[in-house]
Length: 215
Image (cartoon, rainbow, N blue to C red; front, side, top):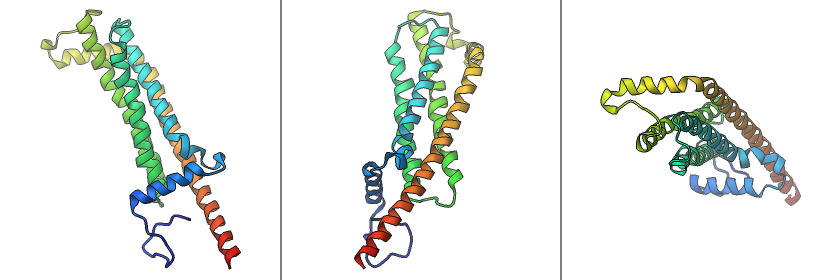
């Protein structure tokens, strides 16, 4: 059964609400025989989640190294800075990008999906770890006295200046991570669009052949 979105409903159509349509179309993708036709739809969200995890690991590792934390509080910082962005990236991309495209919510605006995907990736793969990474490292360094850091009583300006100083050597790597994530998210979203177009064409061919055989 092909999935259509429109105001004109054929007489023999089965009407689905959005939740039912989402479940149905993802079942089609999961059960599709030829993986090459739907590989981006199946795996893009997981790949992008992995990219966010790698970014989080690198950011966390940098700040922990700068503040000489060693193994102090390692797992306490890895989970929120690496695992959480990976999980959230995969969830948000699948729901806000992949599912949106499959349900044809913005059929005339493919660039909107690439921009949305890039925004999710930048926010969760770079922004989220860049907020939690330094904060986590500063808190642990203050707790275990592994490095000299400014006292909070000196005000946020002094703390910001300190963070800017220790972050400066990481700017090049951070720029590379940001550009890489935007490129990968854009490329995978493009391949998802191609998968959807191919999937729709093949489903329509199957429907046409089935109709012809029954006539």
